[in-house]
Amino acid sequence: MTGIKRKGNDARNTGLINAILFSYFLSILYYVFPSDAVHFLNVISQY
View 1 (cartoon, rainbow, N blue to C red):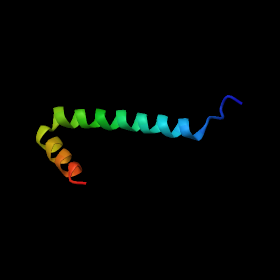
View 2: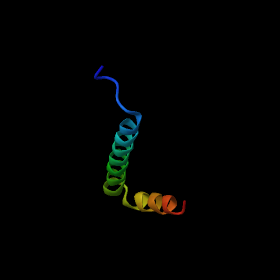
View 3: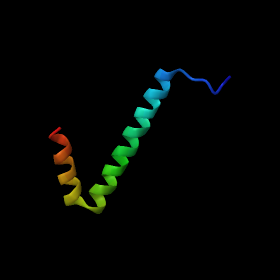
View 4: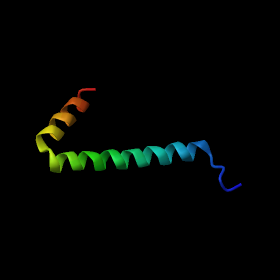
């Protein structure tokens, strides 16, 4: 069936989509709340 995919491709595609959504979310934070976005990035960079 065409609905069956390899788990490796699904995981890679999901990771790519998550990365795109995450970068899009950060870009919104940066334009709407610049200071909050900078603080958010600083907190993430510590881990």
